[in-house]
Figure 1: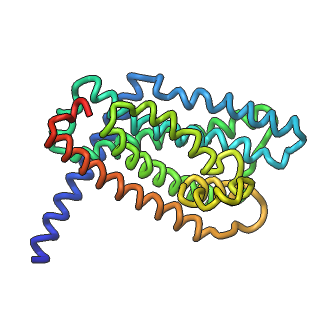
Figure 2 (figure 1 turned 180 degrees about the vertical axis):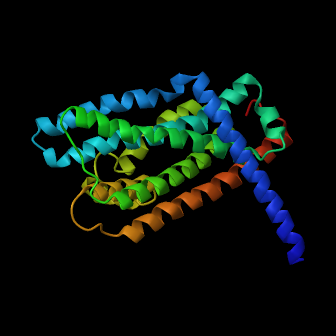
Figure 3 (figure 1 turned 120 degrees about the horizontal axis):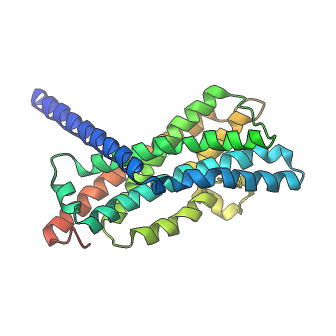
Length: 270
């Protein structure tokens, strides 16, 4: 029985990988055709200037790393959330959602590939924020480069997984863009993107620990500051674990939603 299961598992893994690859290539083509989808990268330098100006005008040069990091994290989450919603919404509006679901490749895999492509591109927001800050005389050193790079990798992973989970919600509704707008700013606050979670009210802190951005923002900030990094393993494990849980939930909910809309015949107008 074990020998029979292993080939099936290998075939399923290859099929999923092909779906991810197809989704990734398609999203890169879409980004070239529709540069407006990269608007978040245009706003990142402007937000950096605003945040840096606020810190400097208040005499808080020590908070410059916060001002430079925040716009990059904003771009990362905004672009992933936009893709998870717009992919389903655009396919439904074009009347191509049914064909995408009926294709041989796994629908969750294709969505995951598209989200991964956007997540990778959104990493440019970090380079933009650092470059713009340097142009106005604010140089943020990366004291712990290994921690910084590792934090970015696990954060990108958790971002893509969380966006996949939200895509499951968007499959079941025609109000995907409304949900996008609703979910943007609460995650910025709970994730401590601009204001560290320790400055939030005590009663809300337990909720922040369920949001991977709260762990990511804290770890990335520590990589920019002198002194040892506190709780490195704890932060990495928390980010990866939240990402894995989100990915598992997202894949399950998407398959469940697709099964229900197939049975009801409402896949194009859920």
